[in-house]
Amino acid sequence: MIKLYNSYSRELEEFIPLKSREVSMYTCGPTVYSKVHIGNLRTAVFSDIVARTLKFNGYYVKNVVNITDVGHLTSDADLGEDKVEMAARQLGKSASEITKFYTDYYLDSIKKLNVLMPWKLTKATEYIKEQQFLIKVLLEKGIAYQTEDGIYFNISKYPNYFKLSNQDPKKIDRARIEENSNKLNPHDFALWKFSKSSEKRLQEFDSPWGRGFPGWHIECSAMALKELGDTIDLHLGGEDLKMTHHPNEIAQSECVTGEKFVNYWMHASFLNLNSEKMSKSKGNVTLLEDLTEGEVSPLAVRYYFLTSTYRNPMNFTDEGFAAANNALKRAYDFVAGLKVDDSYKYDEVFTERFQKALNSDFNTPAALGIFWEVVTSALPETIKLNTLIKMDEVLGLGLINYVGYDIPVAVLDLAKLRWEYKRQGIYDKADFMRREIEKLGFEVLDQKDTYQLKKVFK
Ligand code: AMP
Ligand code: ZN
Image (cartoon, rainbow, N blue to C red; front, side, top):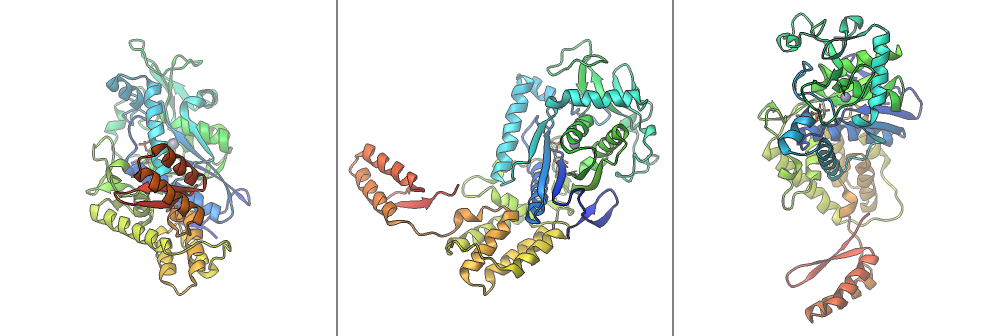
């Protein structure tokens, strides 16, 4: 049984998916106008842990992650500039050059963190028709209205609007929201914005109501409803999205379909720096590349995230990160001293405890604790290794790449011969030998006066 904290009910609940062996899951991904920072990546790793845990429990996981490549404005009041347009203007590039570069950067970062590719990665600009269809239905139902600068959702038509954010609308700071005088209610939000006649946007689209671009929130409803259906099991994102983005997604989706949009909402707490949210707009960001110079593996960052439960804010410190890096190195050194066998036999008692920890609201620190208990346990070595590798199906630390192995005699002989050719300066023959060694699944790493052979794991 999986128990998880549902941010909508604010209770720990038993997870019961709509289908018995399949889970539908949607995670709000990055806005691709700048490099993702390790705060964004904390949420990405959390989403990966949820997907991997569900797979570990035997579910087929249909998870969608979106790429916001249009419509995310710099102000929550539906004013300000589109973040992608702003970056393109500042750097003198086209919008597609910007979104491609930062999408690739994001994909490269998550790959380095062993985040599995989602079932579908969807881009907002590829769902313009679907977004317009939702807006059309909302207009027809009298839930949306048109002003001179766009089409807005009228939140007075959706009574549960403040349920997820748990806010008292009378108490929250309205000043920022009321800046936009086109709205009927301060919390109404844009579904479509018209291009200004005075300027030419880089990304704009025809619509029945006028040329323009979609509001940020409608993209997620369009992609989730199209790919996963009217009701989905799980919806994830960072905790900032609990206030505006996710309430908007719920309101517009439910008003279109008349069905419950999401059964379980989960929000990852922030990664902070000096107790302040890491964010591009504050300028206090750390990138993956800042932490992984030299010998440090990006997976040390993943390990670091796993040392905290996702509902706890994490304050990034150099000491905490160094400790995670050391722990990961110890794990790699430990498995390097063991050899894989073909039995795949693992210890069921430890594995069940491990699974139970993850099934208790994705308690990764407890799961890591059980991992280290296995290391120091009295289990026979092969079972120990197989158990750790089994656990790594969820932890995703890439242990298999560090496991000890025997090097076949043929490889040893080829490597010796290659070294001789190299010493004598017969480089074409030495290169030929290197390629032969690679065909046998090993690589040669040359050092000053010697060389090393390493198995290549695919
Ligand atoms: P954005 O690119 O700002 O749309 O954010 C992409 C994802 O990262 C969203 O799910 C955000 O909630 C999340 N996120 C942004 N900043 C942080 C942070 N400091 N810690 C954790 N998650 C974050
Ligand atoms: Zn979203």
